[in-house]
Image (cartoon, rainbow, N blue to C red; front, top):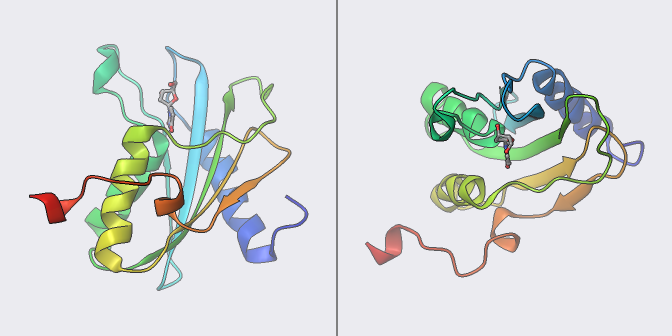
Length: 145
Ligand code: THU
């Protein structure tokens, strides 16, 4: 964390705050995401679980869909993600799941500029990816439709 720029630390702090508001009564695994748009607005999300398990949604998709709904066409510059069991016990970087990568890729492809991703556990080491495309090669996208 300490090696990040102050803007990136602030984004990760927003992700931490979002994680603490996650609704995860079934897995007890809480995830927070904060993304910053090119207009400076920060949009957050957290995982929202459901008694019918597959009806829940990951933090990253809550955040990107919320950004897409509220600020259509505004570029996403960076996303910070923090994930751990509720007791904060996990301190290794937690990368986004495949479905979230696919969803984020839709926005990265449309905006034609990379989205930086920073991910960590409850605290500790932060991993950075310069672009979503580095996490999901050979992606299926609208060019195949
Ligand atoms: N989860 C996320 O929010 N993001 C991911 O990338 C992986 C998993 C959530 C879904 C579920 O609420 C909990 O973590 C356990 O899988």
